[in-house]
Image 1 (cartoon, rainbow, N blue to C red):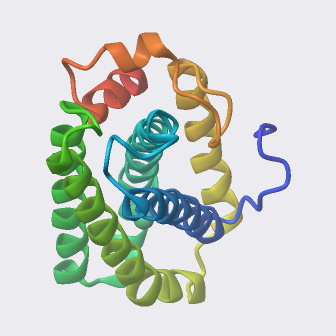
Image 2: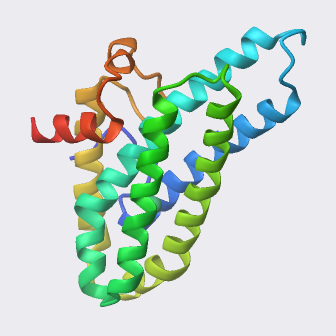
Amino acid sequence: MATRHPALSHDAVTLLMDDHSRVKRLFDEFRKIHLAGTSSALPGMADMLARKRDIVEKTCVELTLHMYVEEVIFHPEARKILNDEALMNEIEVQHTALRDLIDQIDEGDVDDPMICAMFMVLGQYADHNAKEEEREMFPIVRASSLDLDALGERMMTRREWLEREIGIDGPESQVPAAVMANAQRSWWDRIADFARG
Ligand SMILES: [Fe+2]
């Protein structure tokens, strides 16, 4: 039984939409800080860099966990219901592009303007992917006879187990330094490793 996010619904579609909103808030905050200034002469620049770094780390983990649970548990069920291979394939390709960008961002640091540019583009791609899922996939799944509460419970249980394995305490918490330091493997591979046990 999932207990770590008691305020959240266990309905599968609601869980995924909550993830989308949480990730969007992180991207919005990053964009606001980023556009506020890039000059190292600005007062508070070190704090801004630290916050940007924190947002990037959280977002990369959050987005990877979201896509992992979505791909492993939700998408196979959605594929059966939608009977729309073209859409599902398109969403899969979008996820691959997001994962590739996350890998590149993970190799750099926010004091590099190109890493910031990649993160801004990651936000645009993630937004496009979320909107496509919300407009074209979720309404059809919601209108089907699929038990969304049971599916949501499975997703929540898997997500919470992965969070525990990684060592984070819920969606808003800090990623442990030891996990961040293991940067020779992509986030996707690290999470897949945990999932394999
Ligand atoms: Fe999604």
